[in-house]
Length: 62
Image (cartoon, rainbow, N blue to C red; front, side, top):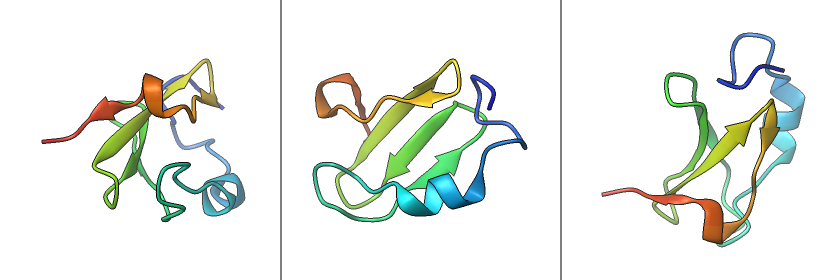
């Protein structure tokens, strides 16, 4: 896995992860290297190929 969530991102891992706030599915924003929860309006960073699934670390979406 890459820091930016590039093509080697494991699709099955993405399908297994859910938003810790809402339990809703996530989508990947490869350009920003984030996992996005549309339900919670949050974007969780991916650092060194590891998704940081902490609400306190998430960026709020407008």
